[in-house]
Length: 110
Image (cartoon, rainbow, N blue to C red; front, side, top):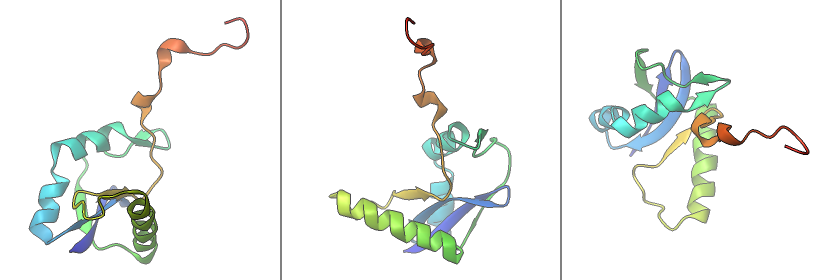
């Protein structure tokens, strides 16, 4: 398996393993992944706008370190170490749909 980084607008966003370039390209085109990339945000912006070109490349040393650290942490807390669909976001992400705007807190006596 080789490690691939999905780069969007010049920044490495996601790392994952694939057997070869064809498998990596197929994984990057996954409908659920593309949905996540449009929903998840970094610094108030979606990771992907739905039209910008994504490219696959090898990780740089910092991205490799992030991958190894997060993969080791997940392996120690999970029973499924061989999950080939596992991926690591290389930047901080927020899921804005996880926030419930229906119950805003206005303080005591709300």
